[in-house]
Structure formats: structure tokens, C-alpha cells
Image (cartoon, rainbow, N blue to C red; front, side, top):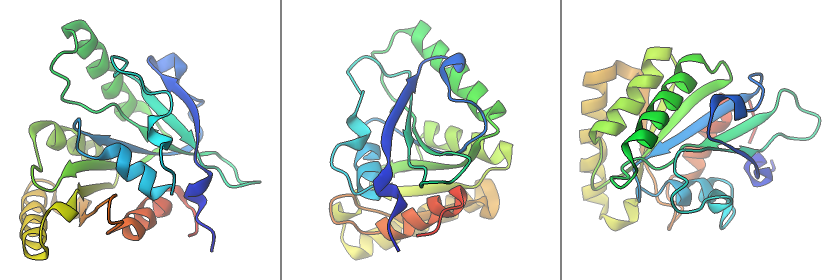
Length: 206
């Protein structure tokens, strides 16, 4: 069966709530710290080389970037939503405050949101912001999936240890509401598994 993710195309970037698409679609959001591998993960899922870099320019880090991957004759629309990489220490405080308020409102009120993927470097997982983003999803009763990227940087034994450690901590904090997997955009490890999770949330067949 064809991979619907290859249809993903840049739709728009939203800096304020008013710029968001109408709230009637199916959306899955991707969050992650700077350099965690979020762009590589999105590109690997969609089998495209630079999808997640379209419209991205340095300094414009407070935008939600929407990619439309709606199959022909399907309604409502299906979107992937790229949240800006968090961890930008140089962003002015007023912009940090704006972003915090914007993302808080998005997670609390967006009916279209069907799930959250939190991208973490498998070597440095579960920083404070990772936990905060997962907490947003759990509070809303939304499914969440932890994607432990750059798994190719570790041997199989180290991968297994890191994966089990994250699973234990997340189960302790959130119960069984957050799933976890190892992933590599470079070697394509775990791409099919992650794609199946997101497709399921979007109601798509792959």
C-alpha cells in the first residue's frame, strides 16, 4: 500500500492562534529540543530530504509549521505539525513568553490534535522540557510517543539499555499512556514503526 506520508507538503506557518488552520482537521504534533533530530525524523517518515526545513529560517523559532498530507478525496484534512525546537537560550524573554502562551493554548484547546510525538536524542533523553511536552498530552488525554532518535550512534546493547530506562521512567510518571521506541533517520531504524503510530492517530492506512 502506498505511503500517504510522501504526500506531505508545506501548508503554512502560524505565529499566533489566529493564523492556525480551521480547527476541524486531524493533526499530529512533533516536538523536540534543538538538535534532537526532529527535522530528520519528519523527513524520514515522509521519505523527503528537506520537508521539515521548508519555510524555516534562523530566528523565527516561535512558529507552528503545518504540513498537509491529506489523501485525495479524504476529509477532514490530515496535518503534521512541526513545533519549533525548544532550548533556544538566545531567544528574547518576551518571545519565550509568547511561545509558551501560544503552545499552552494550542495544547489545551486544539480539538484537531490527535497525538504528540516527542523527539529526543537517545543519548540525552527526558530533559525537563521533554517531560513538560509529554505532560501536555497526558493532561489532555492524548496519546504520546517518545521517539529516541540517533539510535545509530549507539550499539544494540546501549540502545536496549537506554530504551528500557526511558520506558521505566515514563511508566512511573505517566503510566502506559506514552509509548517509546528507538529511531534513526540516518539508518531508517524504526521508521516503519513510527509511521504506523502516527498513521493510526490520523486514521490513515499504510
